[in-house]
Image 1 (cartoon, one colour):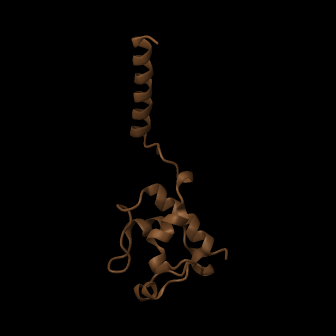
Image 2 (spheres, rainbow, N blue to C red; image 1 turned 90 degrees about the vertical axis):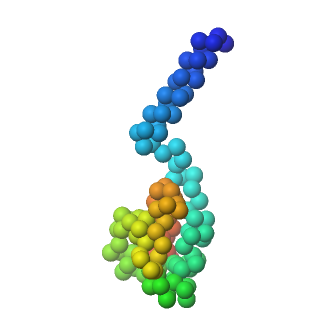
Image 3 (cartoon, one colour; image 1 turned 120 degrees about the vertical axis):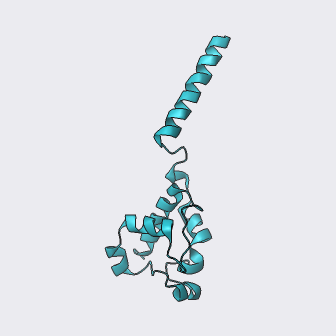
Length: 116
């Protein structure tokens, strides 16, 4: 392959990467995220393995994710906002600890508790 061909190939790859980066397209996809693992790592301490708050979680006012009424009245956007921002003195914000794709993936885990 000629130097021109290599240069062209590298240039195209760099431009595609730059376009993806600056347009906000996520390089990692939510489908690649193990949302259950993220939940078990960051959420189960308070919200329990099955969506029922632990003793610690109950003391902090953690949500009962298995509660059908709460599931029905709470939007996905509200769940994402809560995970991002937390609640002062009760739940830490996760917006700097987890990626937005990870936070969005947690919604399906939380919704799954309402189906059990």
